[in-house]
Image (cartoon, rainbow, N blue to C red; front, side, top):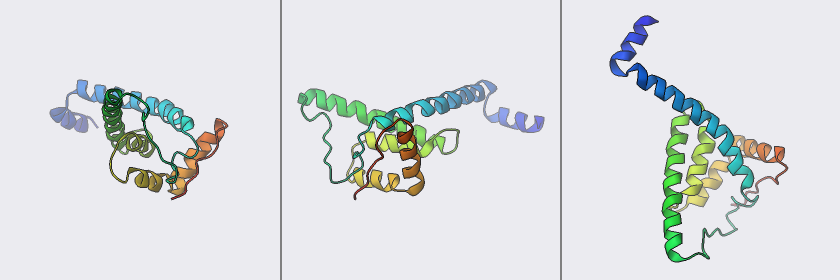
Length: 141
């Protein structure tokens, strides 16, 4: 075991490993809080492709552009952290779903519906919403 530690220490310092461990634990705990908080606040028809979604459409164009930039940057962070959580502790798929929902790109809503439409994901999200007395998500592609 000590040989493995020495081999790893040649490539990565102990301080970096400790920092990565702390960041992983914080990310895991943060995802346990943030993901349910976000998912229970979405309307039940959020993933229904028949319902149009317009973000900040009634705001001043400058505020809308600034908001879109911030929203997309936040989405990239969630997407990246979610990808890391596929290999580290955390709710990787759900974190990536939040990241995708914050990003703006063509056919995004179809991708969201496809991810949420997976029985395991759909049941987990709706079970979480049920615990907080929220209506289940509806999917109509």
